[in-house]
Length: 454
Image (cartoon, rainbow, N blue to C red; front, side, top):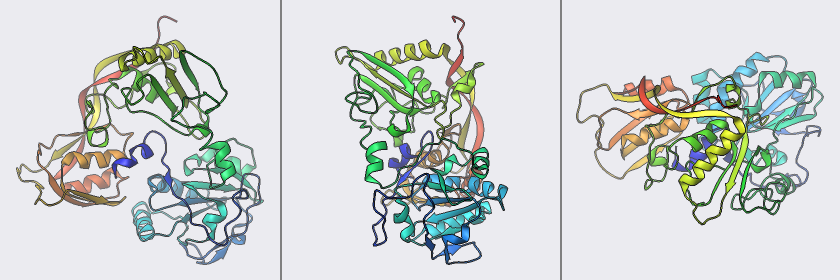
């Protein structure tokens, strides 16, 4: 996993940018299928794991249909296949599920590796046909929900697929979910690109909402999906007199306000290597010991407990510590929590060496190089920390990953593992004299409790 993909994966869900090529069959950019439209006719020419390989859309009529567009470069797509497959099996005979892949040299190979590993039973079309352009697919996963009458009821990401929501689709009940973006210029202008510019201040000159005037400003508001997501890993950023976190949970806000986030806490090779870095010294998320812990549980698809926060102060006298202190005050004032930093024994994944061998995996030299995909990684003349970073990228909601191998030299490593499966990663590591074991470590931990003052 390359460094550029970190923001793409973190926090909630990942989108991979995929701009479809135009064909003679492309619909007008103002006429892509939208919620409330009847499903247009389409054809699939390379359908696998279905009774036929070439079909028209008519074959899916009569039952609700969920079409999920996926691509080779979409981390979120691959990480969600097993969950979608379980829903497909749960609603067998009631709802039809269909994956539409973007043809590429390795898309089919990657999917079939996941299919065999997880026992998937999802029909998939690999044909790079007009259906991508017909639906205006731009960002994936792009998921279209069609009811039994052939009417498009939702256009979301695959993460919005939940048992109760699928039952609502079957029952014909209305439900409001975040709408995914397509190629439509008109849609993008209204909902995304021109609605919010992160280089400008939120709510100024109509940027992301109504205008307002201020000398000093602090805003905490419910997230509007049209602003998309923007956040900093630490406060001491290029924006010397402001903090702006858009589309975040309370876990992220409290981490930024009460952690040592004037310094970066993502793994060093993935952050700014010139900055101070305290990764491995702090627990990944706050420990909530409150009767209102549900506030820290979020759902992006319905925007439940997703917030945007913006703090702007005059540049004169602005420091990262001052900004952080003001943010702490804002969160305490609004949520009435009591927050302390305590040293607690917290879970962590420890990478260990199974062999007492001073030359274990030691590189033969050559150009430093990392190659790989969702099921295979090869390192040449790279530090072992890079391996931990790659694993961390797929398991960011796990406890932190710590190197306890004692290896202080560059290594060569070639492993076959489904990177979304921790057990499969461990199996591959063990074949190379390494392992990941779950242990504990004294970590600085943000502890959130109900305030005794209110």
